[in-house]
Length: 312
Image (cartoon, rainbow, N blue to C red; front, side, top):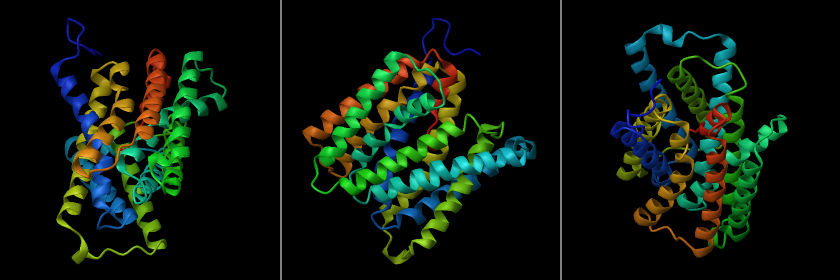
């Protein structure tokens, strides 16, 4: 499998796909914040993922036929469990958390996912490199700084707690996806994850008593939802899967510490979200810790693949 051009430099197509992953996945936090301005957080998430699953499933059936969805019940169950952890709890809690804190702060906290994955590997009796563990300590130092300061806000505590729980759920789902039976076709697996995760969000929305008042939904919230479906869940994920086959893991994995920076910048520009000195300092420490983990683990491809698992 060729990852680079003959002169060993990534091709323009690789850089284009990487730019899509950088910007699109970094912008989903902003889009969520816009959607939940006039839509219930859990119900809007359900609408996003059920719609995206329907579209992706239809495309896969058209291009590859039913054989792409051939999977055992164990594989279906594995994808369903991952969908619940990543999307029902992971994405759902992010939307709930963004009702209380800024989208940029949420993205910085979610950047801790690769750090949690290293912790799970240690629990599973793996032996990460000393420099990797150093990165974990540095990164969680930044998380602690953000949590204790409330991101520079006076009432960010509950929102920060919710986002950290979302990050933990994402991490568990990511870790399990490489240790339990999963469908062989990645796009089919993603379809199952989004469908089950979306239905889980619909159920939790009903339990929470959410109600969608169509007359109260703004045009920009509808636009934000459409953006999440098309760009966040379809285009961004497709670009990511393509990159895994065309670019070095060390290059693809850089999204983990670029996305939060993109999210903070977009939140400040579009929504005028406050960016305090303490938030910048703690966020920089998190990004440095994640960068240290990703860069030192890139030679261990099986583990690097775990760190690249990300919500769609």
